[in-house]
Image 1 (tube, helix red, strand yellow):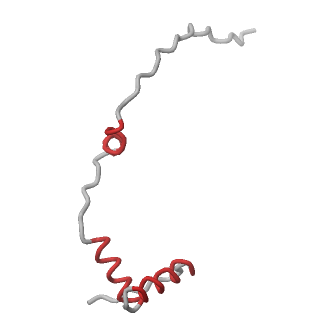
Image 2 (image 1 turned 90 degrees about the horizontal axis):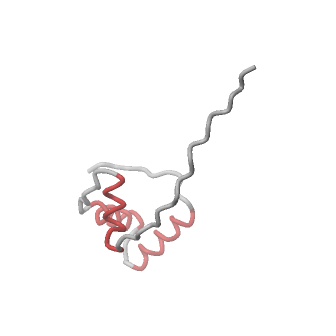
Image 3 (image 1 turned 135 degrees about the horizontal axis):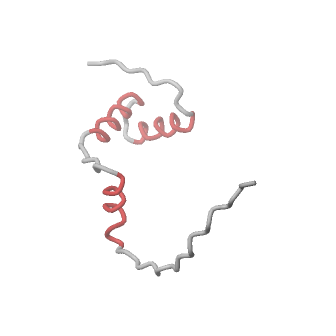
Length: 82
């Protein structure tokens, strides 16, 4: 088994871990192991790209139709000649 040291944990996180461990009747170390085990036990497939991730998250909500906006004519470039 490997040994791991975690430094610079916020006091609030440490307190929550201590309380959670006490509620579950475990040591803080055992509670941290259980949290890591459960968090890493499933391999969630990652989306291949940002567009796919956005579509998966919001696609079920449906789309909206945006109105066509009129385009203005292209302006002529400014002449800085002499």
